[in-house]
Each structure stands twice: as C-alpha cells, then as structure tokens.
Length: 349
Image (cartoon, rainbow, N blue to C red; front, side, top):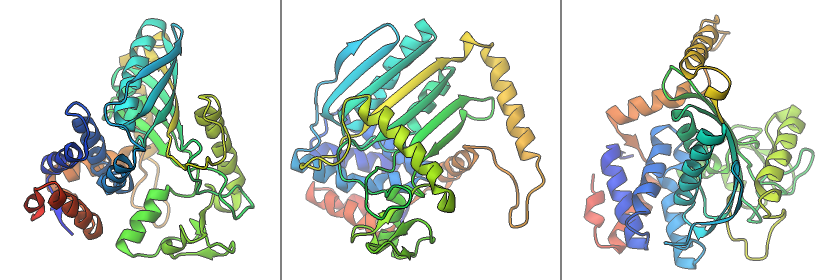
C-alpha cells in the first residue's frame, strides 16, 4: 500500500483530471477536495472516487465547464443550477455566495441542483465556520440509484442522505458532525470491497434481507440499513427529512429516474454568529465545552472521550506529516489512468 505525500498526491490527481477534460480552473478544486477527504481519514470520499468521476465525464454525465446559474434568489436565498458540472466546483462557489449573503443579512440559505458528486459534505460547512458562521448542509443523490432500505424494509428507496453541522470553535476550524443517515456511507462499503475485508454486522443486509458481513453482497441485491440498528427508525426518519430538504425542496423529486444519472441535490443554511453573540466569545465557549466533554472519564474499552470532529483533525495532522495511505486497488486504477494520459511513471512511488 503506497503512502503518498499529500502535495504530490494532489498534483497527480490534478493532472488526471486535466487529462479527462476538466478545465484548468476546475481541476485544482476537485483535487483539493478529493485529497482533503483522504487527509481527514474519509478515504471512501477521497481519491478512490477519481476513476468513477472520469468514467462519468466519458459518459457525458459530468460536463466540464458547465455554466453556474442562479435560477432565482432573494436577499437571503439562492437556487443554483450546476448544469451537470463538477459538484466540487459548483458547491464551493455556491457556499462562497451563501457566506457573502449571510454576512450582509445574518442568515442565508441555498439549494443546489444538477451537479455531480460533491464528496465529503463537511468541506462546505467548514468553509462557513472559518468565516464565523454556523452552517447546516444536507445532500441527496436526487433520482440516481438508491442504496438504503427504509426501516423494516429490504429494498433500496433512499440515498445515504448525509447531514453536516459545523460550528466555529477556538479548537481548530470547528466542532463538526458529518454523518450519513444510513448505518454507514456507501463509500465505506466500497472501500471494504477494494480492500477485500469484512464489514461489521448491521451495515447491510443481502438481497434476501439477511444480515451479512460480506461487502461484495452490496450491489448484488444487498442494501444499506438506516442508522441506528434496532433503533433504525430514527436514522430512517432523519434520512426522509434530508431527502425533503435536498431533493424535494430543490425540485429534484424522489425515486429513481430511467437514466440513473447521479445528481447531488443540496441544501445549505448559514447563520452569522455575530448576529447572536460576539464571535470570539462564542468560539472560546465552544472550545471550553469540548474540553468539558473530553474531561469525562472513559468507559471500559475506550482510552478517551473525543469531541465531534477531533478524529478528523488528528488524522489530518498525521497524514500531512507522514503521508496519505492509498489502497493497492485504487492506486492501480489511478496508475492505469496515468498511463492512459501519458504519465504512468509518476505513480511509481
């Protein structure tokens, strides 16, 4: 398993994207977000996705250079149409636009339609938190293929429907929760496939509705379960609300379209902390709250209590210093693409 310097990895991914047709202003954004997910330890949303993205460009599902279009707006709301552009570029621009509105009006919300996969959802609320905002973002795959069964079911009817909330803090960028409303993100099952390792029971059921630890059953009739195990009705209910915010409100609809084209619908809301309390006072209190939580005596089997987002901060510090591990299957696919575009030797690390 190669371990790659994050700057080197970002440069290689950028070259692959340029080879696939991404514009010079798009490729650095996509590469930064993809490698950023790996740095945070979310390998399932990192460079493992690059071959899929390039395949979608070849099929015409992702349109490099697609126009970024505002369909309607008010002083505090925006409806963005990405026209099937790169999700990373579309959502980053929409987030910046929303931040500027929230600075003027104290609150702002945006929906986004017709864009490709946006990767790690936390990347966008974290942008808001760095500007003194509390942000909530939800995402849905629109009318693309579904992977999650409703509570009590064994057929896919929902996406993994992630939700993220980021809050400015004096500890690092923010206190942040970024979670799928399914038992696990689909990418983590796909990562287990790539590594050919078993998954925990409770993540998926096979096509007959039986619990399984075989990740290869996913895609062969197996489906993800909602978050919560025996209390899965809670995760299921969250997933339904995320779908309403991210699919119905933007106008994507629900269910699966005949084309199966991936379409990340999003809802983003930003709240300017200064409209409620002095920002620095609030950030310090959030940090003190984190310390209060960490001061809890650990339960049996745990070494310490962590605050939300702390694992990712530690992962990033470690991987920036020591390199990003990439599984052999993914590295082989990236190298094959490098050979296709004439620089395969760059992957001999």
